[in-house]
Amino acid sequence: MNSSKIIRINQPIKKPVEKPHLPDWQAAQATEVEIEIDKLEFEQPHSISEVKLESLAQSYPEDSVYGSGWIITELCEEFSK
Image (tube, rainbow, N blue to C red; front, side, top):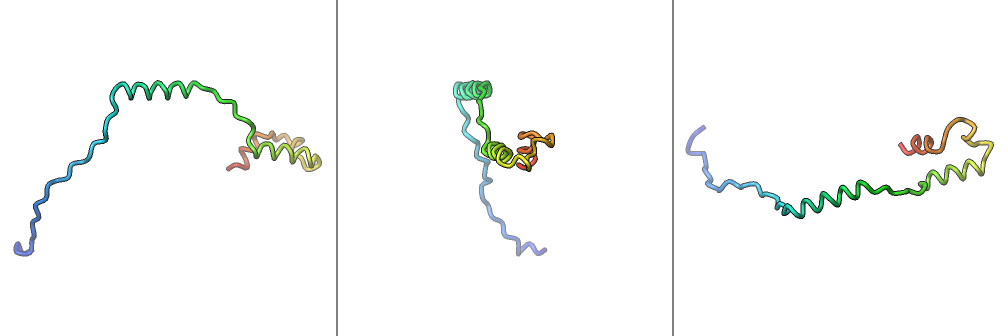
C-alpha cells in the first residue's frame, strides 16, 4: 500500500454508556416485591380448551376419550403442542 492513500481520521473513542443504577433502597424494595409475588399462589380456573374438551366428551359419549384411559389434562398437554 502506498502511504499517500492512507487517510487518518482523528475521532474520540466512543465510551459505552452505562445504565443508570437503582439506589440500594429501590433495588431492595423491588427484590422484596418479587419475593412476595413468588409466594402468592393463584387459583387458576380451567382453561377454555379444557372446558371445550369436557363438553365434547359429554356431548358425544360414544366418541369420548373417557373410556380410553386419557384424562383431560393429558389431552390438553398433547394437543397444545
